[in-house]
Length: 48
Image (cartoon, rainbow, N blue to C red):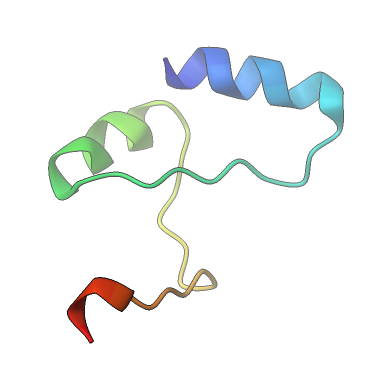
């Protein structure tokens, strides 16, 4: 699925594709070319 997402995004001239995944899926996304980024931040509103 990740290669399909990346191929679809390239012609759109997008700057990045972001995915939200569980810990177990990180390795699969990494194999597809995704990288962990320290520049993306989030707050989990369900835990406040």
